[in-house]
Image (cartoon, rainbow, N blue to C red; front, side, top):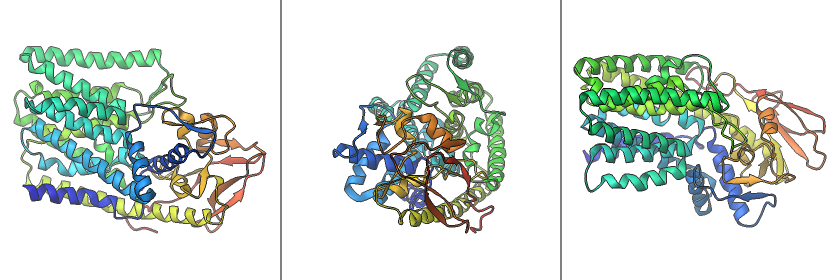
Length: 474
């Protein structure tokens, strides 16, 4: 059994090292801002400052620490590998506790979730918090007198990573503790009251807080299958196949139990589905300058974990194992090809930056319309570490992170509306005091060139066809 744990730990970490750089959206921004934070702590970069912050900072502090020890590449590999192991085994522990036995049959689903949409978006504070919270819930679920209290320090640590995951964990733990004290009828009342409370909370958010609902009905998020929907249309086949397999396994689980509605694991999955259907995809909190986004994707990750717990006690048929293994192989094969292609884009950007003066201010508004997650939006950040400054760095002006910028500084924009206009629409450059360079594809398409932005020049987002249309890289 120990060998099985060791082998799975080794295999789940391979995607962290199979390319030069890990391509995960905001990861480049986290690395870049950790480097900036170290510079600010050393008394450099006047106009930038660090504020005391107690949530949404754990992964960033880890990167800053590791970067001082071994540089950005070492920090990237170690921090992400650590986050993946914590997440995967935390989810495995929770699924096993819910199933009452080691949930090995759920490992293909957990592996896809570990490298799915939340990972590819680069939401690593949230991702790390979910892993820690899963460990905490598992301890409470097992209800061992000596170890269940360890859930408290785990939740405190998870809060420093991201508060939303802690709110979810506290809700799950509270529901579990109450349900254990109730008989069958009381559990139905608790389930109904909880579902109405979630719907009521969503209604309050809709009325009193500025919010945005994503169009369409996100069916794949109900069971977490849409975590597989990342780079391009080819993942839609995996997403659809995974969803069908999940539905089939859930039906088998329903048939195997005559009183599944009294099962806390199934009730929690149902309640999470209610949250997926009711809550908006973006919420504007007054203390921040930009909305909290991609809530459906975050809730979908909770769905994936709870689903693994619900079906964890099923004995899978050989055909089901073969299908899940096939989906796993295709998913990671696509990932390898796509990451290699995006790494090629990053290498070309690095080559173009090499011709600029050290400390140059740069913007690179790029997007790939053929993919589901913004893989290119912050790619310039990692390229700029130690060489240039991303003038459109989004973290300081959001007020969601520890690094902030004073108006008039020469390193980053201070208006989040300017950053969003540059990333998504059009921005007119009017500053005469800073020499700004724009990085964009040359006429050769696969190469990048840098040119000086003139006052009055209109900057628009440029399309780059980065990822392969199928598994073969171009």
